[in-house]
Image 1: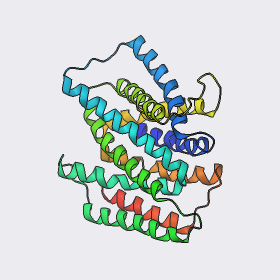
Image 2: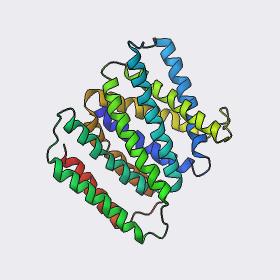
Image 3: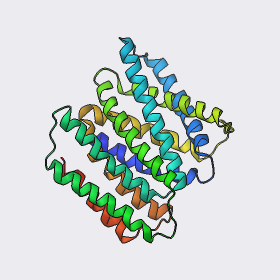
Length: 274
């Protein structure tokens, strides 16, 4: 459990850094430069300690598909943060617990308590947030909601798939594999869009993200390995709360009463599923 809490804390800091940095750079530029650094460190570490080996071709496909879906989730996330505020990001992140709980309930027979009531409360809180956004003078574009929805879907699916991978493979191997896939996917999209690559050797705040996200990913995977995707998603509810506090303190974002009240309803609904 302590690994999940540590991961939630570092992901909250990472979320604020993403929002801050993408204000000055193109989203893919940030993703590629950060993943170049984390991938290099990871490959060096694995080279010194030995690489894990795949046992079957189906596992090769499954692990790579998991990482590709997770990488696409990150791309959608950064584009969404570029277009909207952390308020929207927080609520969509919380919404992902519905899909995770439903999968474990119907597929793995891991039965949450108060399943129906919890999901109704999460849905009501999320709809309340969207409804009250009409009072916001800065309207969020449809593309931002689309990217946030795709981000939530990708992260939920990759989290469940990674849970299965952790039953076979080492945490560090999967974490490094994920970062390498992020670099490849973001790099391919970046080349397709003909966007310039940032200098790897130029010092900036993107490099600060590398150790923070590395700790967050590895701690999160250790926590996921020792629990299950739903418990992991529930503990990670502290990430949105910490992100909200940091957004107010660091980014000076304004949180109206309905942001807090709707988020509270969503969090309460998620806790009722445990």
